Length: 116
Image 1 (cartoon, rainbow, N blue to C red):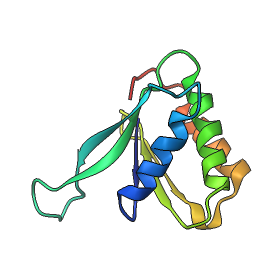
Image 2 (cartoon, helix red, strand yellow):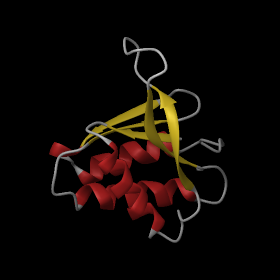
Image 3 (tube, rainbow, N blue to C red):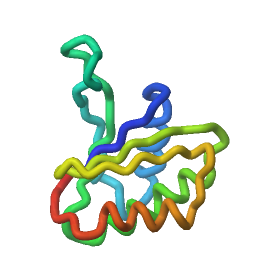
């Protein structure tokens, strides 16, 4: 699974740091370069976080940790989570509804057997 943030790399650095403090996620998150959106100059790469969410119950831990991070945010953030099969979840943390986000994260993460 990959996680991208609008608004620059600072949000991803903060999220990566948050995940690094979570025992269940430590060592399962790394920065990666992903192709930019269509219409941008070719070769443009954006930074994202890759999270290994395969076996071991990491999906629920990711959902819980990400929901907590969003709840404690003081600024707006927009995230796009993408599974390896292309399924996406877009989160606008300006109007975050923690129970709804948690449900949507569980739906996105449930049933995935992939490593990213």
